[in-house]
Length: 347
Image 1: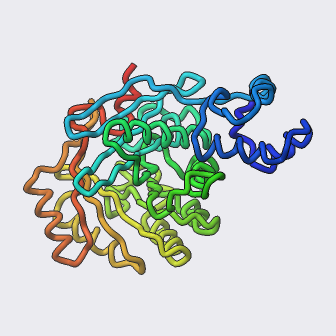
Image 2: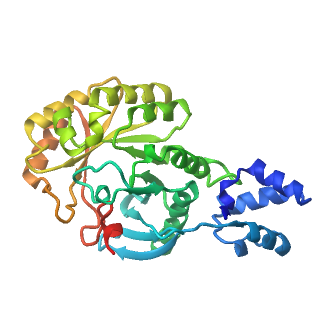
Image 3: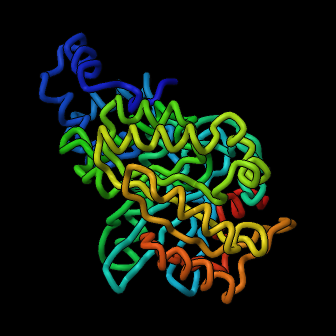
């Protein structure tokens, strides 16, 4: 049975015209789907019951259901969702209450095919891409959590959960369209509050620019030379740093949107003076960039340790000394399974 959210507004209008329903009914229903976030036929209360019954006999809502919720002492909330076909995916609510910023980290795939050595999701393999409405549902459901826990809704979205967003390109882009489109077509969120994180698919970064997607881009860098990056991120063999820099330059020229590098600090692997020097050189390309140094949240059985406080401080100071815009992001949810893929991997 097809999910009703697979249809565009013109397709729903055509269906309703065939059924001799008033044209305005289609827009009413579309608003329920993409602005109000309805997830069942009973929620479409201003549609006649007979119409809802007819729709329910032909179409469905393939919604997510909460499977497990973990609350961290720092306010982070991690949720494992079940898809309609029994897969586990994750979303994380990350509150920064002192500046009233509430970010949801959403997944785009069931598992991931990229096998980055430091990531729990890479151990799962890729089962399938999520549908656009499954990404959208994460935003709707975590927004509800945020309101219940903190009295207000989410302010930012990062496509940084399970999976590689640019390998689930169509679903990623379609979900962004519904999140950013004004009502009744979507939630009306500014694209400047959305960040798409990628391990680095250079041709798809260019495609984002060509398709007019105006979100921020975060490159999961984690090493500033090809030799080390090849070791921890196999995708670098086909998307080396020079190719990625060219694609990011292209994206910035066309969009002028913010670009950042995500850089997990691993002890004695990528946190030394030579590593910092190479990262500084990457930051001198023809586009402004911010470096987010991320404290590693170790995964069970992993081969990396987080950088010591001393090494992390020295590394960051070297970047700042050379005018690199740098922020250290402390690991959130240390007392729960907050690293990507940890909770979904638990049976």
